[in-house]
Image 1 (tube, rainbow, N blue to C red):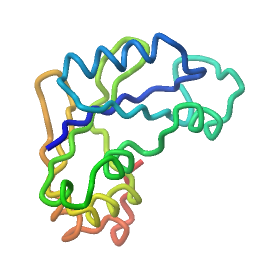
Image 2 (image 1 turned 90 degrees about the vertical axis):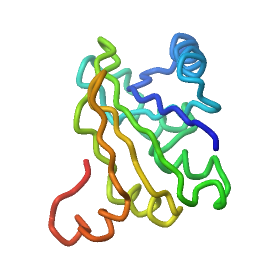
Image 3 (image 1 turned 90 degrees about the horizontal axis):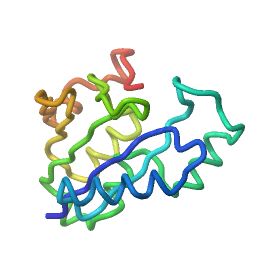
Image 4 (image 1 turned 30 degrees about the horizontal axis):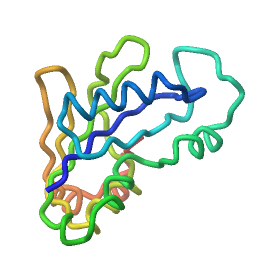
Length: 146
C-alpha cells in the first residue's frame, strides 16, 4: 500500500522552499507521494493578493483527502488507512483537532477507506473509524468539519 504525506500551508506564493520541504518530508516520512494543500488564507501574514483559487491552481491540489483518493485505484483504497496532519507554516507546530470537511468525509466513505489517523501533537494521534461518520452523520446534526 502506498504511503501518502499531506503538506498544508498558505503557499502565498509557492516557492522553491516549499518544494524542498515537500521533498524532505517525503524522505523523512518514507512517503511515496506528498500532496500539497493550500489554505484559504494565512492567519500569519498579509496576502500577496493571489486568490485561494489562484494558489490552488499553482499548487495543483485540492482538499488533501481528495488528492489522496485520486492518487490510488479503488482496489488500493478499499480497507485503507488515510493519515493526516495540519502544520503551522510559521513555526512548524501541529494544529490539534484538524477535521475533514463533509465533502472529504463523503469521498473517504465512497472510496472504501476504513480508518483515518490524524496527528494532533508530536505524540498524540486520533484514530477515526470511517464507519463512525456513517453512523453519526454530522450533516444531520449541524456540526460541520471546517
